[in-house]
Image 1 (tube, rainbow, N blue to C red):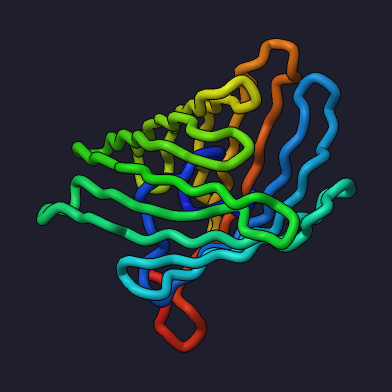
Image 2 (cartoon, rainbow, N blue to C red):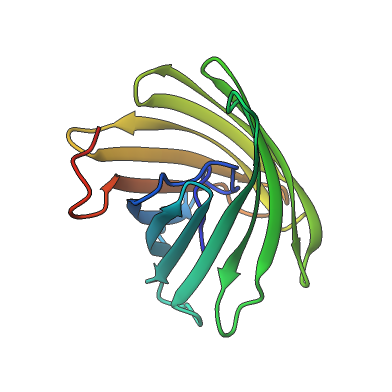
Length: 200
């Protein structure tokens, strides 16, 4: 799925900062069978302080739509920046049906909460909710859930690596108990666009 910035499965109201990028290699699979059946290369660009755009390449063996896009607009930011509301689309492609969403993020200290709705023609409306907590610079954990039998919840941690890299990991627990428990691993790299200064 064309993936905006967020947690492992759900979008949040965060944006990639203006004139910065986030690139990641993503591998998803089944913990029970040990397979790695989903592989993505994701790229997000911050175009202003209120808009991001992304293009993802689905390198999975059975994909019918290798190129997917997404876009997100920050519709509201409180004066202190501790309450955000974003509107966006993901899964934009020639064959796939796009999914729209509205999601809010509240911050109190190092704890953040996320709540929103997604909508598509196939699944209609689903609720999304999650949280993340950063206990040390670059080290944070998260939990999330999306309603609907075909969706899932996830828990995981982000691990800072040397340089501009992070490793975000997660266990995916389907809402349908008949489905296999999965995993997701994201090798993430981010920073300013070339020529726009060094990473802070």
